[in-house]
Amino acid sequence: MIENIGLLSLYFFICYCVVTWIGIIHTIFNIKVLHYKSMKESPGLGEGYEKTKPWHPLYNIVFFSLFGWIYMRGISKPDISIAIKAGSLWAIVCIVLDYIGWVLIPHPWQLTHKEFYIDYQPWISMIYLAIFMGPIIGYIGRLYWFI
Image (cartoon, rainbow, N blue to C red):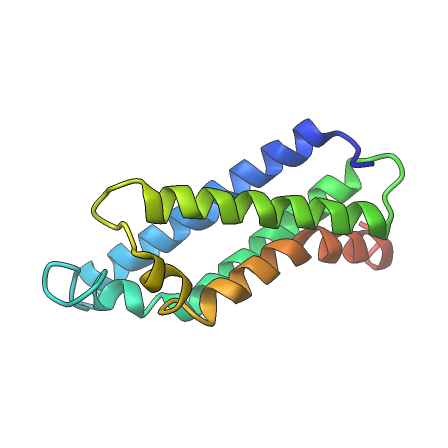
């Protein structure tokens, strides 16, 4: 049983927003400061976005592990099974939200199924693995770093 699912959900949504905004800011930085081509000047979402892709798993592993650690510190009886369940829930919710937000809903950065699930490999798979691992790494950190 997952303890305090409301808090787990809150941490997920905060973290999801943080990593999404970091990716957007990184893309804007690449275009404005590093002068990579935007989506108007190059195919797909543009060179500025394409250069951020290898960084996406890193944003996710850092922030989802941090929020996983905060969650695991805040529950009374953390154990690995709770961490696995929390990571599974986070990954499933993220997969559904990404599908709705990046594939189904029309917007300037909308992606096709192929762009999101094929062209975005291996990054998207690494992102989902990082999100799943977040609470597990947080649990391990809580155990061994005594903080």
